Amino acid sequence: MTSAAAERKVAVLGAGAWGTALAKVLADKGDPVAMYCRRPDLVAQINEEHKNGRYLPSAELPATLSATVDPEEALHGASMVVFVAPSHATREVAQLVARKVPKEAPIVSATKGIENDSLTFIDEILAAELPGETHRQFAFLSGPSFAKELAAGLPTGVVIASEDDRVREHVMHRFHASYMRTYASKDIPGVECGGAIKNVIAIAAGAADGLGFGHNTRAMLITRGLSEMVKLSLARGGEAITLAGLAGMGDLVLTCCGELSRNRTVGLELGKGRKLPDILTGLGHVAEGVKTAKSAFDLGKRLGVELPIITETYRVLYEDKPALDAVRDLMSRELTAEFESMPKLRAGAPA
Image (tube, rainbow, N blue to C red; front, side):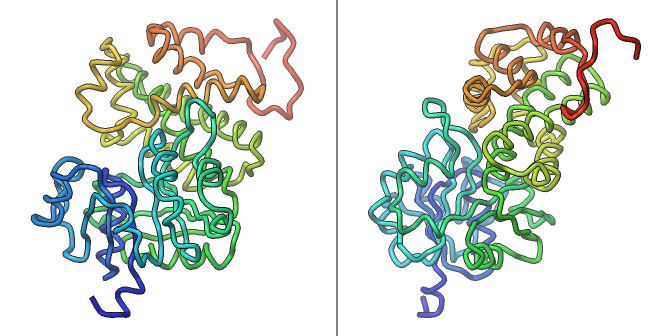
C-alpha cells in the first residue's frame, strides 16, 4: 500500500449487507477499506474469495477491501470511520472502539434505528459512548438505498448530515461516486428520525399488502406515516422540510414499495397470518423496524406525540393483534384535520 493510499484508509465497523455495500463503494474508488467483522469464517471468505456470501452474495468485492476480527486493526491509521452495525449493537461496538477511534477522522454513522431501553437515536448513542473531542467529527448517512442495488452500481442518492461544514463536505466527497450522489444537510435529528421510522411504516405497508389491499391503502399509509415521522422529528428539534427529501419521503417510498425491503417482507407475512418468530427465523437478516416499532411507540408516549400507525404496528408485533383489526381501528379513528394547523372538526359536522 502506498503512503497516499494509506492516508485514505477507511474503517467500516460492521459486515452486514449495508456495511459491505458501503465498503464496496469506497473500495471501488481506490480507498483501502478494513471492515470489522465478528465472524472468522466470513472474514476468511471476504479476504480469500472477495465475497460476503452470507449477507451480500451477489457482489464481487474489490481487492482493496479486507476484513478483520480485530477492531483495533481495522481502525489503525484510518482517515474515516463508518459505523454500520445494527442499531441494537451500536452501543456495544462504540464502547469496544471508544479508546481506539482516531480523534481527527470523520466518524460516519449509516445505521438507522432507535435503541429499545434508552429510546435514543444513533447520534445520541455515539455522543454518549465516544470521546467528546470526536463529536465535532460526526456525520450521518441516510436515504433510499438497498444494499444489493448499490453494490451493483445502480444510481443511488443519499444525504449526509453534519453540524460541521468541513466534515460534511469531506464525507460527501468521500462517498460520492459515478453511481452514488451525495446531498448535504445540517439536520441530524430529522435525518436520523427519517431513517429509523420509515422501517416501522414499511412493516405496516407490507401488512396491508399481505391482507390484499391495494395502492390506495399503501399511498395512505406512506403519506400518513410521513406525518408521524415529521411529528417525531419536530419533537426532537428536527426540521419538517428534511422529511420531504431523501432521508424521509425517499427512503419511505423505497422501503414501503421495494421488493428487497426486509421490513416490508415482515409486514407482508404478518398480513398473510404468519407469526413473527417464524418470519424472523426465515428472514436471515436484521429487520430494524421490528425493534424500532417498540422504541418509537415508547418514545411517542414519552414525548406526548400521537402516532397512530406506529402504535398499531407495535400492537401487531408485540401484542399479537391481528393485522386486519389494526387496519380497522386506524380507519375508524375520530375524524381530524390532515394538518394540525387547521381547527378541530366538530363531532358530526358535515364534510
